[in-house]
Length: 456
Ligand SMILES: Nc1ncnc2c1ncn2[C@@H]1O[C@H](COP(=O)(O)OP(=O)(O)O)[C@@H](O)[C@H]1O
Ligand SMILES: [Mg+2]
Image 1 (cartoon, rainbow, N blue to C red):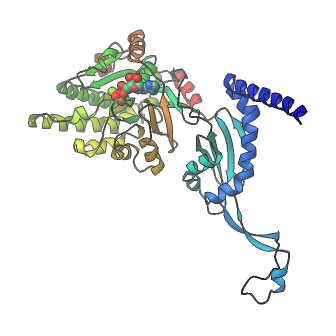
Image 2: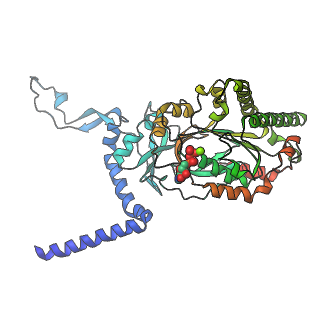
Image 3: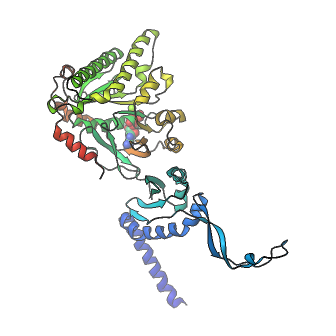
């Protein structure tokens, strides 16, 4: 017996060593060649039970070969129909599972919806599926009538973000990665205003750094509001066209921005254009991105005398959000909490900020305030972001779905360097106000932008 036991043990140990080394050296090829076929076999083999456990099956009547004919206690007679070996019985039919396709992060699979099912039925079962398939997470990545596509990821793609931060065309910045492995884009042309919330040290300022770095290289004007004494944004002063660090300055700067919007409105009216992008190329003004770090500071009242100033600020900010989108003024508002407790006007402002990014939060209300009444699972996901993964956030995308995402780490020094490098692109504030700013967005750039925006 020992004749074959020793060589067998040697072979087994050698095979295991090769597999372990292969996995350590090149996990992607290991996954494609070994992990993926095994996982596929496991998913197909267990799908019936998994679907039943997740209550995704439907009752169907099918012809089946049955072993019966034995009398059951209490039944005196057995009818002919009962004694039949092949008969129609009720079974639990699972939804049809399509071809399991390998993916860098795990695998993708289409599932055909059964009668009466909607994608929401699957969204509610994603964590059950992740446990059953022994994967890190399962996400519903797309749906078509009668079909959903699920992406199962083996590990957390957000544990380390290595993608380069990129400016992806005018007013578009790739700030990080979505959980689905797709770049996380902040696109002001699609979603003009953004609300970014999160507890202290959750990654809000780092995301602002990423945005500033990406936008610095673009023909846009940047304006900052930083009532924390200017500690956050002053460093990027070279690239900012204007910055307000005191309350009085804020009121003045907001009034200037409203004047700017009015000037652009008049320009559009005179040229019969509905928004600045429809203006002839030589008249098109520079887009302005307004960055507000810690919005609560704008609304907090130190003494009663500030009441009027705060009311003016709130009204001006709201007006800017309402009118800005058509006239090339975009808002990024950051805060730890952006709720009605900050005063009237905040809720109205929040409803204008359609892009939502919720970092780690300490209280469930902040998540609810930021993400609104989206899927309750999004709120749970926001609460579950660990403090050890700063920069991770729940993002409501323009397709209406929510995604877990993580921003790429951009240090203050890197953002400051980018701001200084592109300082010459900052239009002078006086020029912007008088409409004498150089026209920087050409038709060619717009066309390129439209092409980039096309689905691939
Ligand atoms: N995307 C990220 N990747 C890695 N570390 C991050 C990321 N975002 C933030 N951090 C870390 O968390 C710290 C706090 O981030 P910060 O943006 O200052 O938080 P906040 O402005 O919400 O208080 C940063 O100094 C950095 O070390
Ligand atoms: Mg901060």
